[in-house]
Length: 211
Image (tube, rainbow, N blue to C red):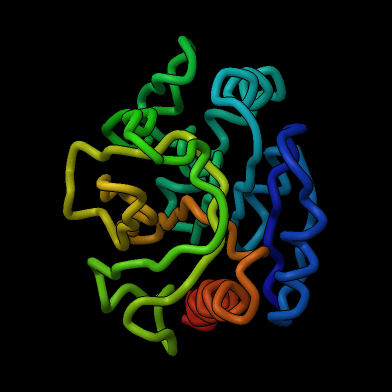
């Protein structure tokens, strides 16, 4: 049974993520313990809210270096929403430095006529890494659920696994590089598509456990 550490840093409802992971057959464990992160088979970093409080809470709990260590070790890692953004170096939303695991910045959507901010609701992905294992068994342009006013802009565009268009702006919706994967949308709110994405992640975890 794959044990997946779901990082608790007081930023969002962790229980919906855990319920979705349970449906895939995994065993989620809500934790803020560095030892649990080290012992788990994989890490999920969810998050809802603002950039500065998120990184402040992570640092106050002594989780920054353990998170960097488990990612560097090759352990499967999935960031969700704010859990994607705080992996970057900085954000236009705040002044705190991000974790800097991924080079690039978090930016706010440009104001356009008739553009709604936050970008909220269902939208279609364009898969820029079609062979990314998160997308197995999905259609070419799957619908997923978003809630965000800021988006990530990686320095290295090749790590983009999917993009989404909101108004006239096409922005990064997911990244994937080796064991590190992260998505801007909420798979736990994305019905069967989101459950398939989480199931694909758990399948990768099991393959690594069996190797």
